[in-house]
Length: 259
Image 1: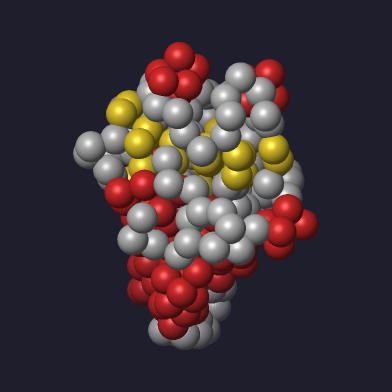
Image 2 (image 1 turned 180 degrees about the horizontal axis):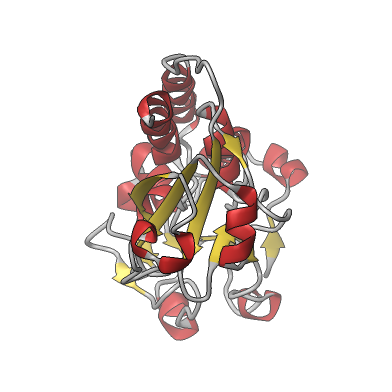
């Protein structure tokens, strides 16, 4: 039976009446949260890009999860990011609850951490973990000026982060002025538009979505840019979890000294 875990439903279950103990993670960003909540022993399945939980069964990628493998694991909780790659029809074939983990803001990371913890009997651990993230934000240093910052997702096709991406909130919280051309998470762009925006800082990620990019400062179309450049690891920056708060501190330091 497919049960959507909305906020009202969460209130109906206490840790004494329900606590999931067989988790399959289809939202890679949630792996860090489960690990930090001290619930590694509950994870029976994970996507292949999740490095945590070495004893868990790999069930394909988050884009192409293997339904047969998932069913064989007999999970009671699936953590997914959306129905785009794990449809309602697929979910109905598994007798497990569904939790959507897909924060686009820092506050949502904390909210969804709390909600997820309720389902696995880790409420106190969540309170401690949330407080640790808030303490990190207290270490941010004010900037004299806010640099204009753009974030490259991939070189070919040129794609940048939009304002609905967790990256936007991270950059703004770190003291930068996030710039983009739209509200979506990912935006197709062109070098001419980048030149028109004239960012002070050009962040470019390297990882599965941008495997062998030419460093931006070496691209002929960017010769007119006077930007500072910062290379980051995709899997560290693109996943919305506790690492996002560590990355904010790193960005804050870079923004303070980029000139």
